[in-house]
Image (tube, rainbow, N blue to C red; front, side, top):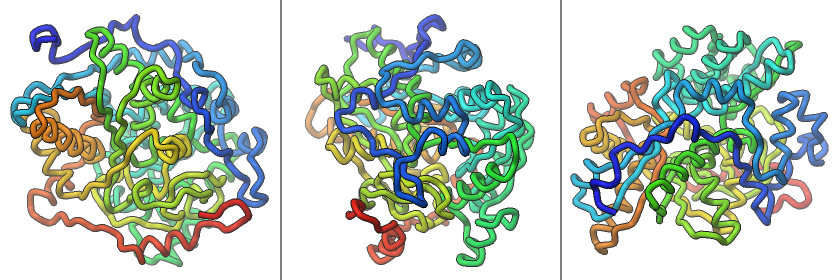
Length: 461
């Protein structure tokens, strides 16, 4: 198909926005292992999970049989404010690289939160409101999830309490202020407001924190307040379900022009964006209908897939959350304060971990300075300043496009542009000033985290 026949931006009609989420677990032969009770090592029941999560979200979390789940109309009404989002042909980047590859990106930054996180935030806030709750608590790394949840809670008039990883709290003051503008209470984590926070501060004085720390504090806070539940912006099955709107729209837009992707690339922290983008394509691969190459891109400073262990581990540093079988660096692993705050989680979604373990997708780890070089290159030719998280996918998309230049193959490359980087200017400043460094943990560094993975029958790794 010629250039003239494919527009720069492919927009779906509002009527073509998905009416159902797609549940990739329904098509998986090897289902993700169940969450375990940290006290008994037995599978968590719906009743047990309901003490922490909203009732309807628990049902979605445990559902691995229904391929499609209806999206409530009130959530679709909210989606209409910024969805469907555009699929963009990166003609300018292709020209700059002088590659025969065709590069497409799904842009999820066209809302005030600046990221894809709003897709799940509005769903989780909706179910909290339907349950009659007073409010919710959560953690946030770079701040995209906290911002999105603050917006969603404001829409449904729910109280929102956010524990923000301390290093991001300090690096991203404007992201913090957007949350406060939408009525959220934002606390740097670890803090002295919770028992687990005080314990972590005593063990790691001066720490910049981690998502695992912030999760522990948010769960403790939700458990200590009547009418509150904890909500999470990544990792969980329910989140990947909500984010499937990304992949469903991407596939529908490509199908309009008969475009079949060869390579699909997403940044990988906990798995929300990657899982959402690849889910419907992965479903076709699982069902034997088509074949695609999937690449998960993670930071070299927090390499859960490429250097982690596939085992049951705590989802949080305080070890109060359920155990999840996932690729993990250990719940007490605290990564260096890199500037991709949304990619600092010690583990990976159990769904994506199982798919990776079964050989359905690849994973690569990239260093921070190379990521920002790619981000700057992309910004200069495509006109969007990308989030540091998104730029991991950009880096590998460029690498794959250059391989096509060497071989002469005109492959179709699709990647997820999870959001914008306009709240990440401290990171860009450090990159431009030459103050950004690449940290890669040693095997000895990682072993300290692995030593904390719980040992019990059946959890050998």
